[in-house]
Length: 217
Image (cartoon, rainbow, N blue to C red; front, side):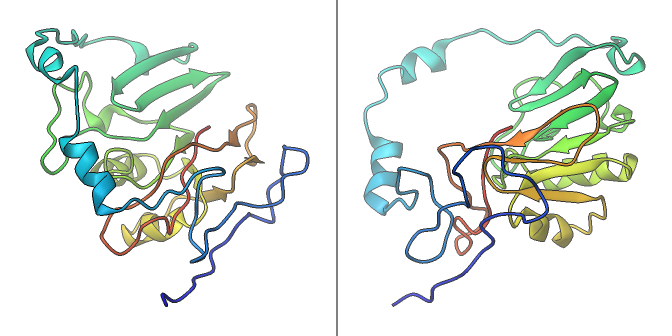
């Protein structure tokens, strides 16, 4: 019988905004889980995902479209409200005088390379107030990208899910971190930001499946 683990199911210092919600659900091993779905997949599920029918695979492979990369803009020198897409789930959002970056991914990772050039230099990303980190998958929580952004923005506060600070501290990141459970509101000025459920899962290594929480904002 696997050893049952007990993880945090809520952050007691953050308010819960959903009426009747108490804490994040855990499975029978004490790991995080989706609200109405088993998140632990077996080898059959993985095999079907990799080798099952993919009716649009050929169409996608033959699609010649590439995003145009606009370089040399003035977005980062302005505080006007706006949105700059840096690829995948990484956006710089400027709103109400705040600069926010989501799921920083500025480089290629392992076997996955960037398909388009980054429109700015990573070292140009400064004056960041908030870093939103949804979960620990490598295409969302990239060590190299996070180290650069946190080094250049030591004042930036990281907003993420329960247990994620363990990963960030292992990277020697010293920025302030706020961890939230689902339906909890972070302590921020000017904007109200709430961590919400996402039907997903978490894993970086073979042994750490669902030991950190995933979510949306």
